[in-house]
Amino acid sequence: AQKITQTQPGMFVQEKEAVTLDCTYDTSDPSYGLFWYKQPSSGEMIFLIYQGSYDQQNATEGRYSLNFQKARKSANLVISASQLGDSAMYFCAMREPARAGGYNKLIFGAGTRLAVHP
Amino acid sequence: GAGVSQSPRYKVTKRGQDVALRCDPISGHVSLYWYRQALGQGPEFLTYFNYEAQQDKSGLPNDRFSAERPEGSISTLTIQRTEQRDSAMYRCASSLRLDRGGHTDTQYFGPGTRLTVL
Image 1 (cartoon, rainbow over the protein chains, first blue to last red):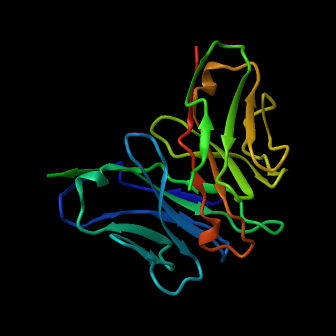
Image 2: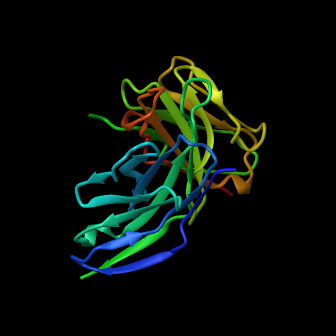
């Protein structure tokens, strides 16, 4: 069974510093996708970044980058130059492989709460 | 453009009542997903549609839960004879379906409906 593990319930970082949020996954399928979402206190789920299992390079989106280590089955999110607005819950998710012509559900980890201090 | 919208944003109901939660996906998105998120946890998959066809309902907890998307756009999640354990945030997401995956498979979430069953 596929599984996502986020081992850090909470993280603290000083403003302007970088922070890494850990995510490990478990799947026997060669084709999968990994996502990170941000959930601020307002409750929205905001898409941040995507990494495909066949992508050769680590994904980057502005201050977000994904440290993808396929052999270790890890997909850590790196936030550079943290800002106060980055304080939120962060979820790692994996998309299950295609079935019958389409991709379907996401499996989420338990999340990591990040607090950015001034 | 407009994102995924859900209504109502908050719903308080008494045990035993039926509730209907509505989701309006991003225009042009053909895949629609329902998730449930308990407090302090990541979202859990309930069901998903491609156009009007319900492709996977493996996450629906029991037969009190049903969903439909009759015209391939707006979807309704119905919970009959609600119980206190049904209290949660119900989230809808949509994606621009692409069989081979990639960024167009990204699921964009709505603001959710917070359901409280008294």
